[in-house]
Length: 221
Image (cartoon, rainbow, N blue to C red; front, side, top):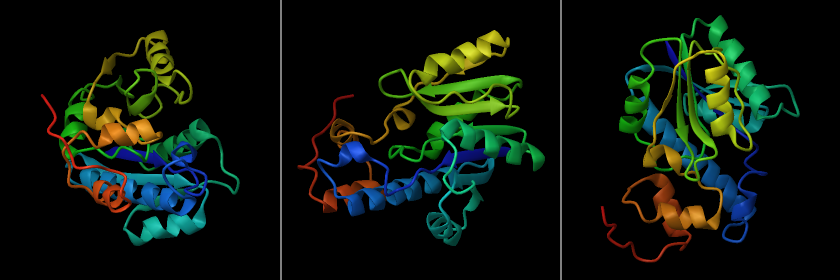
């Protein structure tokens, strides 16, 4: 069984670097809007059997449960990101999960096709598949089969640290570079980059409704 795990920070505290563009209420809305787009893409991937959001926030978790999403609640106060992922990993293993894909909750360009392509690299366990962030330093997708084959190492320079963890253990580590997986929305520059790609997502429409975009330009291939 393939599990997708999405750690969810507090939407009230998330996306602080977008404060020059968005109010706290808008940033909270953006978190859930991006997540809804991601869930639509993930639900279209046949190989994915479980989507699990891990959060300490019961109010936000209840919203996700109303969307039909399984929520794993951390203790109040919550662990740091890697601790939350370790908690979800144990839960996944106890439920019989054979492979796990960890994604951040802010990938507005995510498509089912991008996820399916990444998963094709992970058919022969033990294996790790990584998708780098736009700057090449962060990890925007961590696939592990089995789910505990390496520990999560999110944070500064996580991409190189995940590679090192796999190589240290002699685990094959494949790199999958994809625009759909590389762009997360953390800064005003990310928002400007997002607008350069054609899309008809809820995130796009919401940002457009907030008048953050000019008319789209045709992007050269």
